[in-house]
Image (cartoon, rainbow, N blue to C red):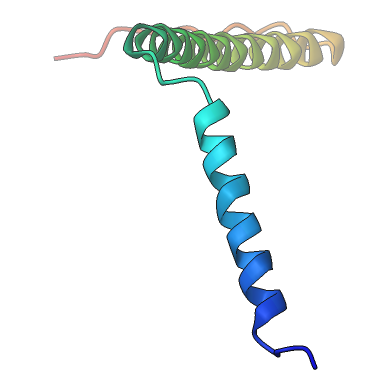
Length: 88
C-alpha cells in the first residue's frame, strides 16, 4: 500500500534540486556590466526625450505653416501677424 505523502515529498525534493541547479548555472552578476547597462538605458531615455521634443517642435512649425498657407490660399493679404510695440 502506497503512503499518501510519499510521492509529494519526492516531487518537492526534485523541484528543490532543480531550482538549486538553475541557480548554480546562472552567471554571477557583474557590477561593471550593470553599470554599462544603466548608462545605455539613460542614454536611450535621453535620446527618446530629444526625439519627443524635436517631434513637438516640428508639429508646431508645420501647424503654423499650414495656417499661413490656408490664409494665403483663401485670398487674404494680411496673413502674417504683425507685432506692434506696446505704447507707454
